[in-house]
Image (cartoon, rainbow, N blue to C red):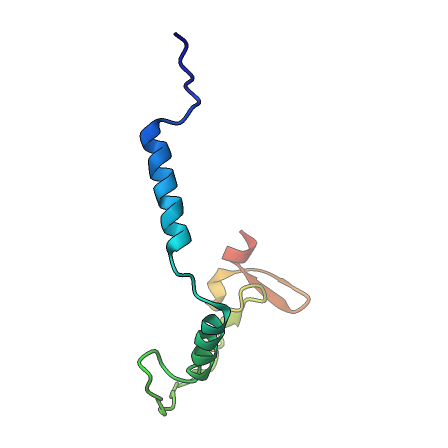
Length: 99
């Protein structure tokens, strides 16, 4: 007797049918509820995830570039002059960007 190995086993067929029925009976969200959730999320954009507004200023001390430093024209990082690979048209490039 020949066996068809491509045919699904009966236990697999039953589990697929059961899962399909479960998906059909599951309640999917309607369009109105999805739009309402998105609108609620938009109103909370200015707040932190905890829902509180933080009114603190960020204070950062800016240190000027030293004479032995340069700004790479490719990655825009401030590097020490020992990391300068080349200078072209007044723009310096670091070893990492040129390598």
